[in-house]
Length: 110
Image 1 (cartoon, helix red, strand yellow):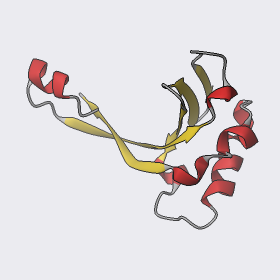
Image 2 (tube, helix red, strand yellow):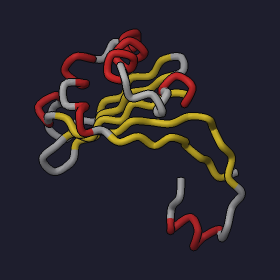
Image 3 (cartoon, one colour):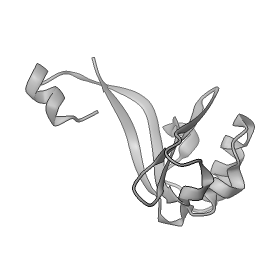
């Protein structure tokens, strides 16, 4: 992650491409209890819910090869299928996914 604090503490650190990425979008805060954080993990995927002031931040992460951020056609259906096996309420969580943005690569400092 590109943290200013990390840079101030450690200087420039070599990056390693994890070949993972994520999609992030806002959801209805009613999908969780007040202040509740939820996470689902599965082989090659995770789905996290983080409450914010009036919305819910939803993050779906997986290997970039599975996310295929360069292919927008059928994205919603492809992601619903990819994350269906982890037991999350997929239809509710993906209902607001029209405003998502993608991070095409997750990088980790070594």
